Amino acid sequence: MPKNPDTTSTRAVYGKREDRYLELVRRFPLRPLRSDADLDAAVAVVDSLIDQDELSAPEQDYLDVLSDLIEAYEDETVPIKPVGDAEMLRTLIEAKGVTQAQAAKEAGIAESTVSEVLTGKRKLNRTQIGKLARYFHVGPGAFAFAG
Image (cartoon, rainbow, N blue to C red; front, side, top):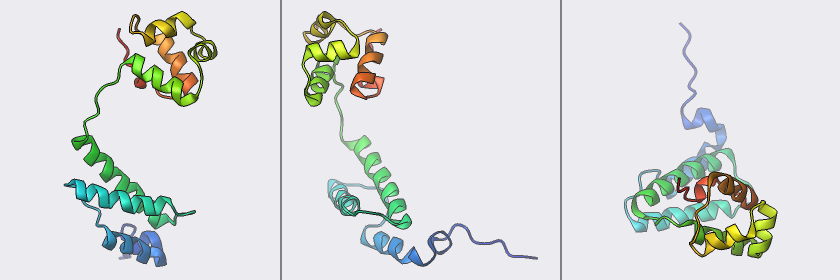
């Protein structure tokens, strides 16, 4: 009876490049992060990898998994307070380096609407959120739809 080929070991996946993957695992084992010290060490490894011009397949796989571990730790330990539409819109306008009037015109929304949102007198509706999300190249979830 023929033996099934091994398709799950690091040697089968990476061939001779397996050594680089194992070197990374020895440098920083892929396990759940449990402290800020673990987080800092993981971020240092990620930084060293993304500073390279090109990553090998083992390096890219390692980076993907380590990034997932960082995200999981941060999701549990770093609370992110919700941001209101006014603050989000103000930040996006500033980051894009445009004026309120430019943002309103280019997004296809009345300038008065943008002004009222920024002063907290008005909430964005679905249509406005969609236009602003497209204009600023963000997901609509960046804005808090109020109903």
